[in-house]
Length: 334
Ligand SMILES: [Zn+2]
Image 1 (cartoon, rainbow, N blue to C red):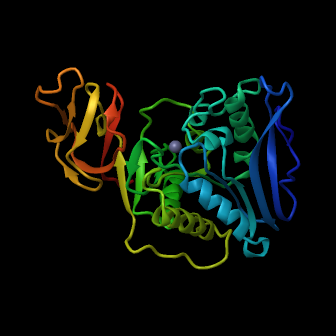
Image 2: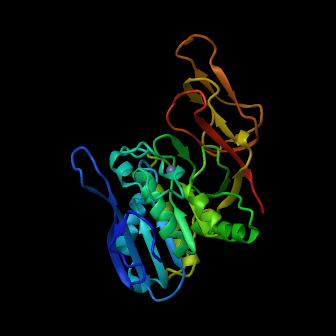
Image 3: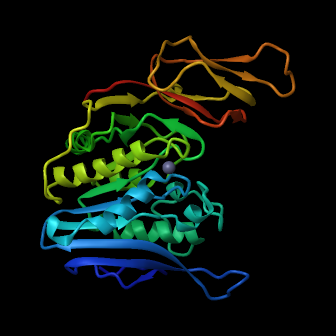
């Protein structure tokens, strides 16, 4: 299928075997009028079977997906799979190279640009190609995120509560197969244009994740990511071998109310009272904010409006009014 795009690539998505390649994105800069930004891509194919589309680095400061997918791209041999695996470990490569959530070139958030438009700045051009060329080939779409530089997350596999119950059931099953501690049903409170939301709208079995944070990045979070991707590929019948069971069975939780997402009522330094997985009751303070302007006044209490368990909290204490502080979840069932 021909895609109307500015992006070029040598990758042949129908070829058997393993290909390492690049998506070439035209980019004209002050230093070079004609230049190209290369977004890495690996395709592994063996005969017919389902296709998995895996991405990391949608946000540049989220490292779990980037490192796990680079390892898996080298590790997985074509003869170990039936079908196809397409991996983009650094979807927003400029953001990855600068260690930032947003692109340093156009200041855009890749995960607010989907499905993108052909003639856009670099982030929108990449999103447009990915949206139109790749999910149509895929049965399973996985976009690996974490809290990056700003949030701690108890590791989870995520999805929206999509209206199609059959699709939702398949997504929860795939999420359970991953083997992270939680399968987390979330709602959008930070804008539209998310890549996982777009893939869900196409009816694809879609998984996002929130696995740790830049500060939590290490052996355990990379293990949960790598083992999870392999488990999901096995669960879909693409990768050979038995699923690796985690130490504890994943729990399905949801945060479907806007009030489950607690934002800073005033600017200042947020002092948390709770840690991840702590229980919270509506009306209970989850922390307090110390004001720069009134340093010796009583700190401003941050009150939970819903009851449940804390699955995430901000990792950087300096907050402006309206910025994210914590998320409250509770058991979810279909
Ligand atoms: Zn992210």
